[in-house]
Each structure stands twice: as C-alpha cells, then as structure tokens.
Amino acid sequence: MHEMSEPSSEGGVEQASLPAGNYCFVVDDDAGICKVLSFTLRKLGFGTREIATPAALEAELAQHSPALIFLDLGLGEHGALDVLPIIARHNCNAPVQLMSGRSQGVLNEVVQAGEQQGLKMLPALTKPFRMGVVRDVVAGLGLATAAS
Image (cartoon, rainbow, N blue to C red; front, top):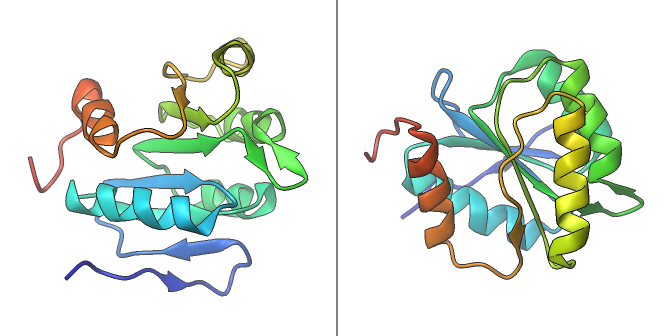
C-alpha cells in the first residue's frame, strides 16, 4: 500500500517522507487534491509536502528547496497571486505548475505574473486533469525519481 502523510505540527502542512532533494510541494487548500497528487508523486519516487496556506508555504520554503511546486490558483481567502511573491522572495528555483478549474485565460495571466517575478512557470493545467499528466510534467522536466 502507499505511504500515508502525517499531519505536521505546523498548521496547514502535511508531509510524507522526504528523500534528500527529491520532493515536491503540493500547495492547495483542497485536501482531496493534495492526497491524490501526493500519492501520484510518491509513486514516481518523490516525497511530498502538502501545504494549504501562504504562511505554511513561507515556513516550508525557509527550510526546504523542492524539485517542483504544484500550485492551485485559489487557496481559500488567498490565491496564487499571494503565493508567487513568497516563492520569489525565497529565490526558489523549482518550476511552478499552476493548476485550477478557472479559464485558460486567467491561468495564463497568473503564469505571466510569476514569470515577471523571475519564477520558472510551467504551462498551466486546467482541472480536472488525469494523473498521467503529473507523470508527463515530471518526465518533461527530466526530474530523476526512484521509480524512473
């Protein structure tokens, strides 16, 4: 069976085992999406951090450098536009995979906003998407995983 995430004492963060330098952040306030993405990423050989708030992301980036960040457009009362400056402020070099059920036009605007802050933004994914797309994103970036 798959490894389960355990809640962390830092509000808004759940984590699974983190192979050194080989893990992804899943930033989404929908616990179900976090679980599915994390499960898929773990099958690809990554550890994960499930992050629900900008404050929790700030704390994680202060301690860890992810290989990839999956970022939902909406995070409750916050959104990706609140999170992008946090990622930029930490000089994070991880590609950012924006995802949302919103229109492609809105997603493209947020991708451009991230690029203007010097972030490595990937083309946005429109929800719902198949988990095979996650495998394609990882493979397209050439990220080595234990399952590769």
